[in-house]
Image 1 (cartoon, rainbow, N blue to C red):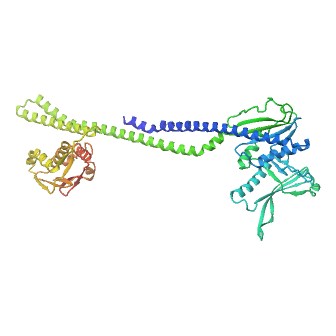
Image 2 (image 1 turned 120 degrees about the horizontal axis):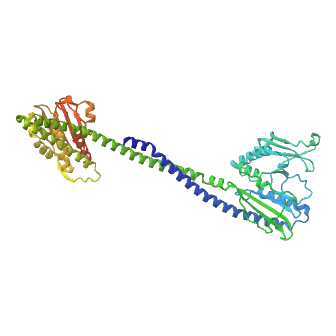
Image 3 (image 1 turned 90 degrees about the horizontal axis):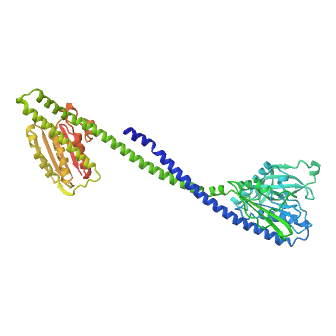
Length: 556
């Protein structure tokens, strides 16, 4: 049985841990799913609003465009301005505009150069230059990282601080060709009118290999505008620029209108990415002057997980706390069960040992009566048999008392009991044994020791203490009983106990060594019963050695 309980104790935590972790994962999964669905709904609503805003702006400005040569420049500036102002930072959107002949007029891209629309036709335009037409993806990443460092350093601290990095480009005089791109780490010196630029070291450079060095000598340096859409963080821009869906617009001449309606609706694709698109006609629906394609890609699962990260931590902490509490509760239950089982086993073994001695004596006397019909010893044998059965009866009675004391249904009576009176009553029952050993008994009742409790059980405790004092006393010995307001002391002459015996004297079925007396007498059952009764009445009982005997102390 003990082995079974021990194996259960070792393995009980496994289903508890599995259950709590399963509950945590299922709960967090369902909550994350709800948050993800909410994100999808919000993204669709915002996407509709953005698409409507772009369409209205395009339709309004369409009436002001005087000729087709202005269309491309206007639409490109319109697309750039959308990202330049960082509108709707929650959405990752790309826009492409086609004319009625299906030629690409403008699209979302990473760009550098003069990106603002100007009505001043005398001003030299230089770009914008689409970075994908010049730089590899890795080179564009490096340039964007320097741009982000500059942007982050100014927004995180103070926008008025001197710039850490500066970006310059070298173009042809007419602005048609891009020669070089430079990134400078700026150095500044404080002057009379504030920080004054002293120059800078080039830390990154791109060179157009298709332009000769001779031609570059006539190039002009310019401080350009830079467009990296959604550069609210480097990671978000990188997600936007690396998305195939957001940049894989139809090529010129291959554009087709699948549904002849203004809003063909929303479509989704993939597990981790939520994709949506709008196709809009500008101008007359029957004969539009331009087509606008707007695409959105959002990672709703990733966004929901990011949104839920603090709840994950809090939920995990709460789950672990509850799990450990349950494991601790089960551990205490199993520990208690194992202790009870061990006590039951020890109790059974001790009872078998205790009952074996009187049963053996009874058997021997009975066999002598059968085998040797000695009439002169018949009375002696029968007296011994009766004595042993009485001892067994007392043992069983003590066992029943212990069982009652361990019962949760035990209800102790409440009355004021005089400990001194109990001592005198129980000493009268022991007078024959006291006279036989010629023991002197002395009472010192300084004050009455009053206890609130059950008189019947308190009498059993006093009887066991006094009977031990008489049983383990020496011939012509003495017993001193002293009562005070908060204690009762019982001293008896005899052989002092060893330290180990004192330590285990109140254990169940503890037995003194045979060498301490003529025969083995159990003390543990009686003293165990004393300690149990004392604890139920809020009392403390101790046993200690004296020079010539033992002292038992009962106190509040």
